[in-house]
Picture 1 (cartoon, rainbow, N blue to C red):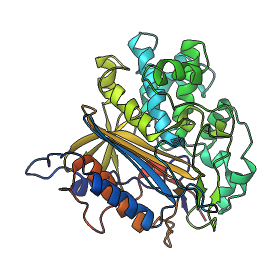
Picture 2: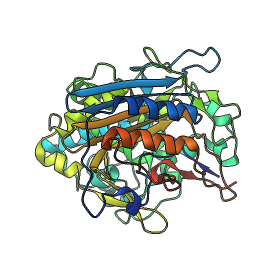
Picture 3: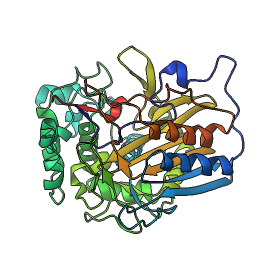
Length: 418
């Protein structure tokens, strides 16, 4: 059984496409057009009609903007979703954390290629702490395993019991690291890319060691506030602040009907995934980042220095940098991240100049079903999400090939045996 945890189950609009399906055609990239408002509304509604409970989307093209929503925020009452609802953005938090670390690098307070042990001498086993660098944490090449199954052990037995038991549990970052170190390593330090939330918990502790203050406080002041975000925060309670949807988790049919996990102690995600935001704020955040308002030019270039993410056949799915990835679409290259927690998934992509953007949130997670090998199978929602995002970024002239729109994106999968 493959269970996507801490991240959304699949990335849409080509991020999970084989490179030959997602990349620009040989004749050159398709020029993006102006906002197709009718098309955006129609494709957003198509996601709802394909089975998504509720979703909201914020699209920008230069000074043009469109915000839409479709479906319900509460399946029992029929309360509709609205643009601007607060949303748990999961691993998009990693971009915020990486920006904070790179700010410190720009000030000369840490070296990206220095060992973690220089600042956290007792956190990792001695040999590992000397071999794993700050850069390896941020681009997921450390080889350190993921803590998520250790934090929610029932998932390995095909049970959601630990999800329910952990709703109001507070878990310390050092404990998350311990669980990650107990997990199977994914390789030698620097050997290859392998996604692990543990990397970004360590990055948060590293930020605290360098700045002398709580990581969430520093990120709030120096990243969230500097970007001009007003609806973005690390919540202090299990409740999402402000107007929000419920968060429905299906766990690939294991939870039937899907249950609401919108009230949850997010200490288990820390600086790897605990941020709450809105789709509009996410567009503003990535625009500020790509326009150079959060990092010096040299550090932004480091952030966009990537390693390949490949599938089992060697196809390059995306290129992962330091807390962001690059996704090639028919109309060019886009930067961003995706994320998910129990019941909520988020996607955010922006063109290199920050002019063409989409951020999108969904309130039903792991709606796909698994095949005999435990691999999630494509659902009509996946194709519909891809169509909407491609319409937003590339205009009505671009389309995804039917039947090739989506394969599970490897950052969002934790493999466990039945």
